[in-house]
Image: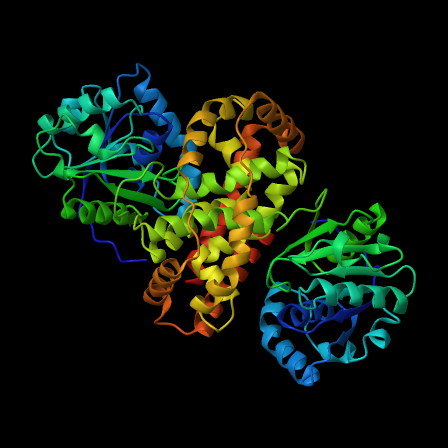
Length: 313
Length: 313
């Protein structure tokens, strides 16, 4: 982990759904002044409720969580909310028209150097900045849900994003304890969601064709690949799995078998039968616990894993 | 974790490469008497060397590691090696002819109730048991490498495997601290390797098309999906990611976007250019450390993660 410098102190969170509220909690816990803007009538109630709900997790992650609301303001008027911000983290609906209009307004209402970052997982910066005069200080800053917990933030440039914007965004996310990675270019789904969806596709195939139950597939992942990939990514894993002969040697030997397996991978679709099978097996696997119980158990394990990695390094 | 009963006490490990030696170390650490058989001239030297090398990892996992060799025997003659065994864990070369001949000999040389389990990752039990009179007590017991460390063992029936064999194999693997999962039928690559290869396919695509560097892709995985899937499998993750509206609701909303992404996933092949790109980026990412240094760091993290999960549960 790079030592982070304290460079930013004032952030606006535009859009206060689950993602925006999670960002706000994280920023507050790292000492930033946060202004949250959203037209929702229950804005203050919703965000303070989320803050209370997320505080135990934030506290377990390390940063101080006393008096978080002392540095928190609410401002439904987006122009006023962003006027003094050094960074805007936009987390509004993934609607191209809405986002295009919003970013034109953000450009007009912010000071020239303000970083404009979008949590979008689905729209290219090149597209949602189309109505801006100068989209150079805009980038995607896509968290892996939930932002206050999972380290990754994918920073994705649009065609007009300046290199300095990417570096500044990385510095900002490091300051709030995240692991930012800068992608070299835009691509639908970015990296993490594409990788996730590739594995999930085969998972759906294996369960719906009756090779393995949904619950057993989840256990297979947690007791093998998941553990492995929490300690080292897929390339390092294969490198080490191949023995000291080297990665090139390994790829040449692995290649033909892997390519054959690729040809056999399933191509499911989310038709009614697939959704019915998966839903029924999900209820069978997890239906004896509530959503909150399952989430709490997962978050407890998640925090324990992250603490273990921090201590080991 | 189910409380395991002590049911088996005498095991033969047939085939002493990396996998066989790792199995032997695990079985010894869990108090079993182990006879290792392999025609290699350096059999005793190789296995005892591996035992010494693996002992620190085994000790960190929990079981006692004193005097492991007191319950260890070597017997190059496979018929003699398996004569008294309650379980045979076969880990020889993945060659259909060799395995067919070997399993016919194992059938003749073992007592009728002996479990015959193969570590194969590539050959169906239905195929490698073709020369046996009664293949009912044979199954695949496929570890995720290395067997002494990673919990998963996939138990895969052949067409003639008896149901009791699968349950007995699961009891055996639980006795030695593993997480066994019984697949419902044979499929090339079983489950974990198919899932792994599906994600790896897209990983190769994203690196070779220049979206992200190999090193950054590994970091993206460890800081998002890997952490997630060590705490909960892909179905539980999506269930919890979808909010309390339920998995069916989530699938219906997620489906179209996910299917669109599936259509965009890459289809790389291991041609010379791909291997050259991956090898060069692997050297750039990890070339400053030796194979042993990388492996030691990964194993240290791996053990810390597994200890954290044990303590959290």
